[in-house]
Amino acid sequence: MTPRDASAPTIVALHGVPLTPAVWDPVAAALGGLMAPDLRGERVADPRRRSERPGLLQRALADRVLSRLDGGPVHVIGHSFGGQVAIELALQLGGRLGSLTLLCTRDTPFPGFAALSDTVRVDGMPDRRSTLRRWFTADEIADASPAVAYAADCLRDADPDRYATALTAIAGYRPTGETAAVSAPVTVIAAGLDGVSPPEVMRAMSEGFADARLIVVDEWAHMSPFAAPDRLADLLITAVGR
View (tube, helix red, strand yellow):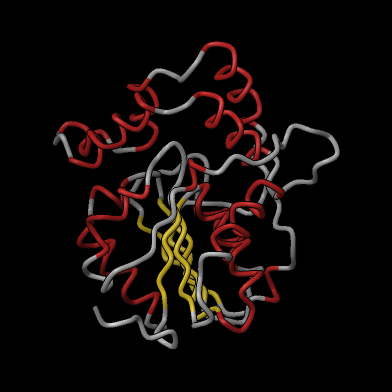
């Protein structure tokens, strides 16, 4: 086996919750391969503890991803909760960061998830049908997109405690560093129908980076990028190539 060239760029793709690394499988080949860590497998301190500042969970996960990387350049992609981990990883990579791509995420708190987190801890996972209607468009659900079936399986199999912990972290998230310090090109991809990370929130986030481009896909909902893998792959290829 030919050893990997340590100077070649690594593409790291970070998934949302309660998803799995498999969400990136349909676009991995188009990108020439990628590293997709399993963020579910990491146990870190519960961010509800008052001694812990916002962003600690996302930062801890980014630390663990960073520890698995070699010394070469890195392109970072993140969706939803994974987008927040991606921001933290980008802040730590410094000059090694080749590009940062953020899909359907935010760098400001979303307090509504605090109440949802409490509900999940008491009652378990929320109703799958209502969650899928929030994540996908009606047409994507009616067409029985493979991404919809995949997301339904993830919701069915999710660990409620881990999901609640992530929701709490999202509810209060702010970056642990100044995003203006990220000098690499940043591509922000927003979905017009996303209720958690709407275009206006992602536009404001993009303005905090030194070199950011915003793309809004009006007809997409939160998980729609994965129901359109060819289009998503094209967007990611362009973003990584900036």
